[in-house]
Image 1: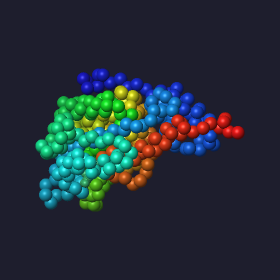
Image 2 (image 1 turned 90 degrees about the vertical axis):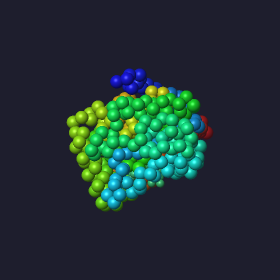
Image 3 (image 1 turned 30 degrees about the vertical axis):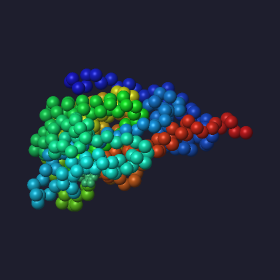
Image 4 (image 1 turned 135 degrees about the horizontal axis):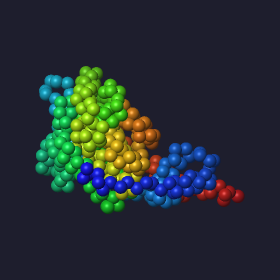
Length: 351
Ligand SMILES: O=C(O)c1ccc[n+]([C@@H]2O[C@H](COP(=O)([O-])O)[C@@H](O)[C@H]2O)c1
Ligand SMILES: Cc1cc2nc[nH]c2cc1C
């Protein structure tokens, strides 16, 4: 496959991790008393190959925006989302204006946010050229009745995600965060997680933006039909992105893999980024060693994906916004973990 031929994922530096653990035990505190912070500090040392790790000064969020065939419900019929699909395009403008949830939260921690129209079902003539320059297509096929993408579109979107990660790393990123914006994202994410882990629809479908009981039952039926439709032909991760994903899911997977190729740590976000991460791990298994989980979302598919990836989220605040908003809130915790190793004194110096 041309898209993955150049994928060589370096491994984090385990010597630096071990050195960090030894140093943590020498610091002026009871051994292990900083709990999870110590694990995170050692993990960052492995990612940066230094003790202490580098400061996390340059944190960058890439928000992949796009629509889905499953969100195009006829008027009056139950939909998969509590909001209309037009919200995706409207939110791209909000991101651009700098007033989205993730933008405000990112500002608090000094992170940058970039939004990319990968598959929004609108011509966004009024937004900045660099926002729309990577468009792969408008929307996607409705996964309960047809494939989301053509194989070529899945590869193209994966390459776009890789290129975005390259651009952010070349611009100096110390840490990358995948963000998502797309009405219907939680349905597609549930289908990808169900197919990746062999779980039935009712185990992975949640309420997303807040559908009621009827909406939830409709979502479960959509994901059931989608999983049934593709049964036996989505073992390959690119086939899964093609059949059940979207251009944004493929772009996010490419972004996650390329961050690892470039030895750049990633903080995963909500259900869409976790679904993409499961697929990305099947494309490049070692890439998962470069990822942390920022938070636990309320979506069941995000929780089962966290478990499957062996990730313990840093925060658990009942978040369900997506956009990268949970991951950016974990950044101060990571900076605190680094500060421990960089600035604490040693037990040996006690007088
Ligand atoms: O990541 C999450 O935990 C999450 C949970 C529910 C909703 N979202 C956001 O809401 C949108 C998807 O919700 P829905 O109901 O339209 O599938 C999409 O833009 C996501 O970023 C995100
Ligand atoms: C307003 C709004 C903002 C969002 N951000 C991510 N998903 C979203 C869905 C809606 C509806």
